[in-house]
Image 1: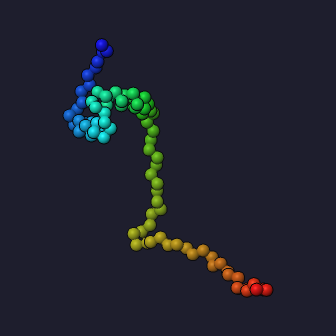
Image 2: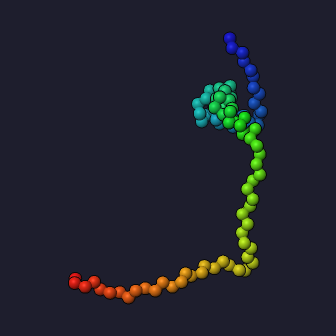
Image 3: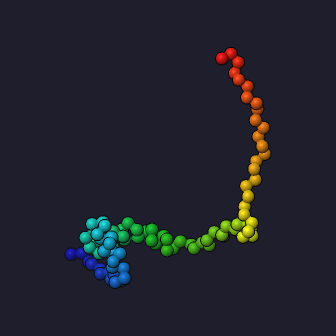
Length: 89
């Protein structure tokens, strides 16, 4: 017989665990925990041991007064060539 360890599931987390059981077909909380441990354990350890880094600085938008709306500047006018019919048609 294999050694067993019991895990206590906080009552607040039980609805989420039951939802996962329903959606996945996993039969017991023990199976659910084992699957999490095997599939995501290394990722969890890596994420918890990762060196925290500062978030990127916020993007600073140029300030404009509330009444001043941005405008689109038209590009320089393109001089169109006059239409010339094709000869020989």
